[in-house]
Amino acid sequence: MRILPVLGVLSLSAALLVAPSPASAAGPSTASHSGPAPALGPTATGYGGAVSTVDATATAVGLDVLRHGGNAVDAAVAAAATLGVTEPFSAGIGGGGFFVYYDARKRTVSTIDGRETGPATMRETHFIDPADNLPYDFPEARVSGLSVGAPGTLATWEAATRKWGTKSLSALLQPAARVADRGFPVDATFRQQVADNAAAFGQFDSTKALYLPGGAPPAVGSTQRNPDLADTYRLIARQGTDVLYRGAVARDIVRTVQNPPVSANPVGTWTYPIRPGTLTLNDLARYDLRFPAPTKSKFRDLTVYGMSTPSSGGVAVSEALNIIETARIKDTTQALHYYLEASALSFADRNRHVGAYTSQKVLDRLVSDRWAGQRACQISPAKALTKPVPPGDLNATGCTPATVGGPAEQGMSTTNLTVADRWGNVVEYTFTIEQTGGNAMVVPGRGFLLNNELTDFNFVNTQAPAADPNLPGPGKRPRSSMSPTIVLKDGKPFLALGSPGGATIITTVLQILLNRVVLDKSLPESMAAPRASQRNTAGIQSEPSFRTTYGPALTALGHTFAADVPELGAATAIEFTRGGGFIASAEPVRRGGGAAGVVHPTR
Ligand code: GLU
Image (cartoon, rainbow, N blue to C red):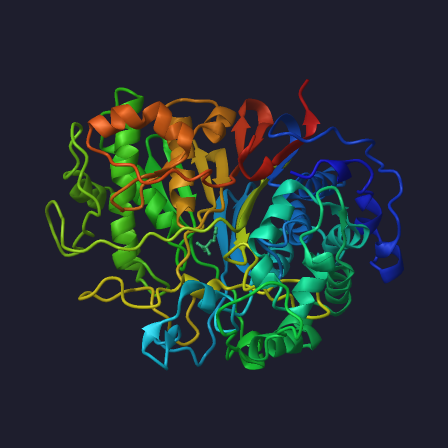
């Protein structure tokens, strides 16, 4: 959480109301019309609109847009652009994501699939080293041009604002450009993210110059500026998003991918060759957003909307909820037991059956109550299943186990935001550059990191002898776990939530829903509660406090714990209360704590 710039950095009304010019956008901020903003903590309750992100500057930008008449989509895009500055290792215009939107007037949920797309020339063997026919080690694949997909984030912002917003993208980029110009204070999380990536960042002049000043990570409390990114945002504001898909920025992206800007004087040692990629100008020019129907399922009296393929998030969350719904849950141990069992079963099915090209028929089957019944029949209330569990057979008519399990990816990158406006519109948006630090290459002169999203493909078949739905292919999008979720009750928004965390995103979203709906905790309690993730592996991954609190009872049921992880996820959420109120909620502690705010706080 960045605490300092909340006051004073944001006189955004001017930027939103007048045509952007480099001079005005770069100039110092004047006093905000809206008066001093309150400090932003992890929980805020009130009216008039709400924003929750991982970062106080981004939340403040979103709130200011709402205060000046913008709707949820406007605020989400302005906050997202700001996160591209202040959370550059998690997300930005070099990456992609999934945008879920509830339109209060139409009472519909729509989505934008802005996932990165592989080159037209990509083959199944994309991550196989021709020298020895073995898959590349993950770091070698990641820090390369091979991992970069055509980015969808900027196209997503443009489409969202055009379809549903009220301000121009040009105007909405200005607050972020100002933050990039003026800088923000480096906090411990930011510094640590650089430190964790120092060897990779140190190989590229452009990345080194921006994030390793004097050859070391920036000091906590120093001011981090990014004038190149400010200029890129303003160039986009003037020339339109085409500049990134067909113009000068596109050429720079392709040059970086095909000819990585490797430093003659690297900082630190990188033991792998840095391989070029094959993404072309044509791949960028042909980048297409998709607008798939959301996944939809019922859980008790709620309707749960999520992201469809190429994300597996919506399907996996819905399948697991449907399985949990079959259980008679009498206490917390049973709730967690069913949560862990349902997660493992859904991950087995997701690994076997869900990829970019899974048919709607299969997706519908996986989120059906009938399928949940065919999977839940294996669960015993008294004894945990042995993990990994086999995926279900789609042709089965009864209870369905089969033969092989699957891998358990995990990442800690990505960012999530939740916004609601006074008209009742809601945005849930998860976006990423994949690993923290993406592929480690800042596009020279442009100030943003490229994604390594294509490493979300499986490098080899993980499902043999069955087919793996997530192998690389020409122009294909890698399977994601991102799970932006909007839940309606009686046809009106009840809860919106999402999180980063690679494949643990699915379990984090699921666990917050379990806490809120099944265990009846408040939203802030549901967010703060210790987390565990069972992604169909022998051992459950959990935060230390989860294992200490619930480990003994769950172990007695036969669950096994793997080594602890310090934290899982960095969620944001908003709950909708009676009479048009909001509870905006962010992490109290994880990833340095997030920032929730409302337009009119309730005292
Ligand atoms: N690339 C991951 C996905 O799309 C997200 C990365 C992360 O959250 O760490 O599922």
